Image 1 (cartoon, rainbow, N blue to C red):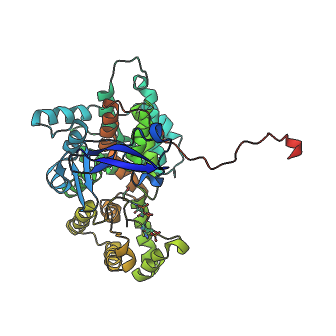
Image 2: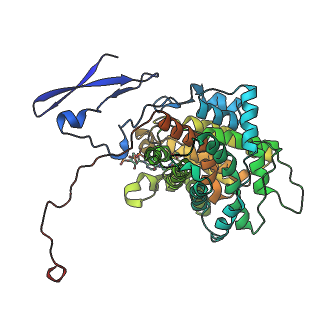
Length: 428
Ligand code: CMC
């Protein structure tokens, strides 16, 4: 594209090149802005700022499109396994049978976690939030693999990637087991990725546990739907932390912390809690829609609604809503909050407040209902999101390193005091 953007400041005209992506998204390249004009840009929440060029995930918020490496989310969720999608995100292509078996086998052989990590884990209180525990233990992994932060060590990134994918589900299940007062389960490597996670979550030493294929299939789909979502808060955090050359474990741990917030991945826990509150309050959906419309005074938002980028249906929410109906009926679960959720969606979609602001259900709106039907407790919902998002974080971290991106370092407009003399304490 040959167009140039013109900017007139203080009567002087400056020209900046424009860039076009493979899906025709356009950007103004302002790399030289400050050097040539003395100005910077202010863009709170980075609503208009492209932080990077990326070949991993494409999303069109106006059309409700999401693709990983060119493949539609609808097709991947229907036809692929989570590890196939992980491979696709991290290495750029769908694996051949041979590549897939090698990848899966490699992950299986790294599912065990150093026993000393368990000692760290045992120090956490029984009611610690599993997201806090997860981010701490992922950060602690760097201590067990010091070559991850040793600049002189031969590059072992590929092995760290395998370790993260293999061990995150193992660590994630510890918090649940502790909350139940049950012993933790070791991984069973004859099981596939999702079945192994379910085994570690739900098997008890006193009886046989058989993984229900309906449950593992549903989990596989949910993890795929969460696997990447371009430059969201947690992913940008992973890239930003990694840009300082921090090791992969610390970078992913930072991403887990960012995901925990209720405006991001933590929304899935908030949604179920909100639906439970509505149920306990007599199920009056209209009352809560009204409260959300007065968000500024009530301070209440409809969790699971709205998205920074989607101004149309979140394609993941469409798939999850359908899956929620299927999974609950296959498992014979009758969860009254599903009806409340549908009522809330219906009411909101016809309300001018939500219509004019283009607020649609997002990925977190129905996911908790499925997780609950699978037996996963509410405080583990965001952990499930983290397990799903891990391949995306890894792929984005790797891309940022491979492309040798500079350290991320935004600027600011200072609005504080101008120079003044120090006042001794006894004169203040
Ligand atoms: N309920 C009521 N009003 C809302 C909501 C909501 N859930 N979301 C946005 N609005 C209103 C907001 O008050 C504002 O109104 P006004 O123009 O009158 O000031 C307008 O819509 C635009 O909102 P915003 O906060 O400027 O939009 P944003 O792009 O900065 O925020 C969001 C996006 C996802 C943080 C926000 O929609 C939200 O807080 N949603 C609830 C939390 C949630 O479900 N988060 C999960 C997001 S999807 C998965 C993920 O990212 O992890």
